[in-house]
Image 1 (cartoon, rainbow, N blue to C red):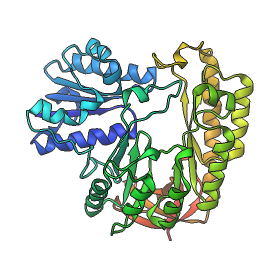
Image 2 (image 1 turned 45 degrees about the vertical axis):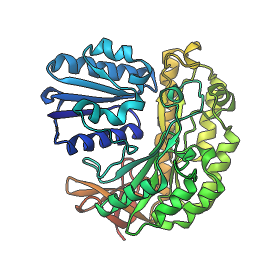
Image 3 (image 1 turned 90 degrees about the vertical axis):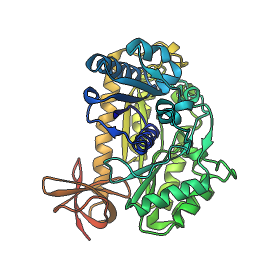
Image 4 (image 1 turned 45 degrees about the horizontal axis):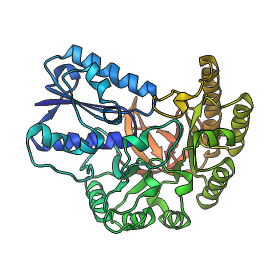
Length: 413
C-alpha cells in the first residue's frame, strides 16, 4: 500500500506524523509522492485557528475529489474537536481523535497496538531530528482550544526518551529538537521527574550532539532547569522560543495568559545574563479583539525596547468555541495593518540581531546545499550561508562575516 502523509500545524504534529510514517513502513507499506497516487491518505490536522480549520477542510475536499479510490484517515486536533467537519468534506474518511492517533497503523492494518509515545528512529528528509517528550495543556487561553483537543497531560518516560535520543545520535543526527504541547511541564511518566532532570540525563549521553527546545513558556524556565542548561555548554542550543502573544498587559489579561509584560521582560533579561548572545524569539498575535490603538502602540514600543531576536506574527483568527470568538472582532483592515507593522518590526529585530553577531564564532549545523553553497543553522537560530558545499548534518564552528536579511554569510572558523 502506498501512503501519502499530510501534516498541518505544530512541531508535535510533525513528530507524530513521522512516527506514523515509520510504523506503516515497518508493516511493509511505502510512501506516496502525492495524494493522487496514494492508496491511503493520512491527514494530521490542526485547529488552533479558524484558518487552520479551513486549510484542513480544503485539503480534504480536494483530495477526496482528486483520488476517490484512496482511503482517507484523518486525525489531529480538528478531527478531535469537530469530526463532523471532516466527514462533510470527505464523507468516507475514517476519523481518529488525538487519543487514538498512535494506533492508526494497527487499527487500519489489523496488527497489535504499538503505543510508544510516538518514538522516531530517523526523521524523513531532515538534517535535524524532532522528539516528542510531552503532550497536553491545561492553560485556558481565551483564543485557543488546545486544552480541549489535548486535555491529558502526559510525558515520555525519562529512560525511553534517553534511549530514543541515543539511537538518533547513533544514526548520525547531531541536533535533536525536543517538542511538547507544553514542554515546560514535562514530568517523567514513571517517576514524576521534571524537565531539568530529563535534560541532565540527556546531556550525559555520549557523542557529539546538541539539544534544542522547540517552544517553552517563559514562566516554566525554572532556576533548576536553567542551571542544568547553562552547565551543558555547547550541548544545549542558546535559543529560546518564548510565546508572548501580546505586548500590553490589558490584552494579556483578556487572553488569559499566565504572565504580564514585567515578568516576561525579567525572564528575557535573565536568559541574556546566563547565555550571552542568546537568541530569543516570540509568537505574537496581531489584532486581538480587545486590543486598542493604545495597547498596540504600547506593544510595539515594548517589543522594540525588549530587543527580541525575531517574531512569529499571527493575524488573529477567531476559533469557534473559544471565549475570544464571542468578542466583537476588529475591522479586517486594522488587523492587517497591525500584522504588517509587526512583521516590519520583525525584520528590524532580525537585522539588528544578525548585525550583533558580526565577527562572532558560532556552532552551526549544516542543513542542505544550494547553488554551490551550504546553508546552516547556528545554535542561536541564526541562518548562515557558507561559501562551499558541506554534507548536511555536520556541526561546524563558523565565523559570521556579513549580516544579511535572509542568511548571514559565514566561513569556517
